[in-house]
View 1 (tube, one colour):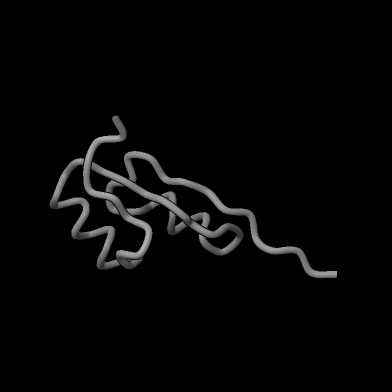
View 2 (view 1 turned 60 degrees about the horizontal axis):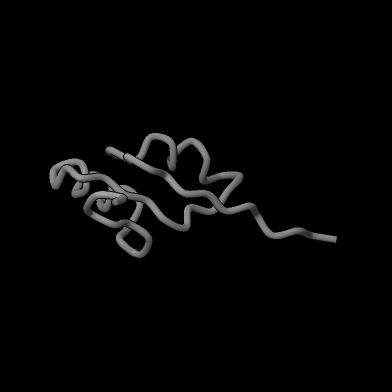
Length: 57
């Protein structure tokens, strides 16, 4: 029986190194950063469907 991959959130994601390392075993469902430059790199590497540019407040 196959189980779905666990999901995770990547707070303060930066360029997405945690997502890069975890994406083979887990599914990123939400990521964020407050820096537009880092956000652009993250989005280029991992897409925009689960990324939030802004504070977690």
